[in-house]
Length: 366
Ligand code: F6P
Picture 1 (cartoon, protein in one colour):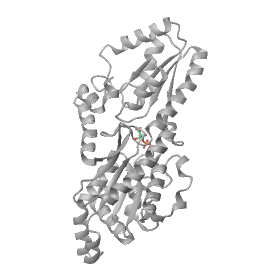
Picture 2 (tube, helix red, strand yellow; picture 1 turned 90 degrees about the vertical axis):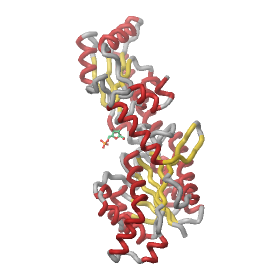
Picture 3 (cartoon, helix red, strand yellow; picture 1 turned 120 degrees about the horizontal axis):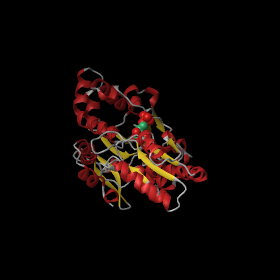
């Protein structure tokens, strides 16, 4: 029987449990044995009890649970070859040569590297007497498939990452709460949202809540942004608006790549516009909590497709990840997507903001 393992890695995101549930159940449905790797790559390196077989009922009720129930960790050991050697040995000991990983771009890049190195790792294990040549033959290639789990929606070649809509929903809910108190006191609020180098959460939250002004990394404001922002907010106030909401992505900066901090925005609003201003950093409230319907559905459909991809892969197939493009679940080449994702960061660093926006896709261009 084929043994397929599933693992979550990097920052947790709502929907990760749905994807583990789907992979476990689809694997069993297809006559395979399912395994869970606990604590991300750490579990792969440590092995033992951190790699355990999962049965159908073990994942019951997981769709509505937030975070990742099999744990996640940032693992230094796996970034070095000795760690990956131990991971390979642990997998072979358990009879596993297919791995579905749900994580962000760093985690998926690590997986592809592991796959590329696999034959040489096995070679070394044989040389050290850790595995037999028979085992080397049986496990000669490693099959990996990626699922993109992240609240940031920062991964190229897919329209949505697992968790981003849950997070966006939570941000909107929080802004609605803030709206009520801001309205009552006629106050201004500067709200910082997550997203790392990506402005998707800030942009979509701004559109969804009717914010007065937003700051995102891909599109820094003009040099006279301080005047522009104050003019727009004064205009809104003159139209009778009792509250002001400014959303700042945590990665926001100006044209010189100097960070635009919530404090800086607050100072402007209070000193220039004389608005009673508060800062709210939403923090990890945006990441925890249960998944919205969309993420439950996305993680389930993609988990099923990940198992299909594992079963149909050949040694020649380049590593794939499961995407959603225009509402269709598709398999896309992993490394191209990782490269395009990194290109956005490079474009921003090179101050080529037009390119950064183009790479992010149509919703940013509009
Ligand atoms: O990638 C998800 C994310 O929540 C980012 O939005 C944020 O920058 C980062 O992780 C926070 O990481 P940590 O939980 O390690 O502080």
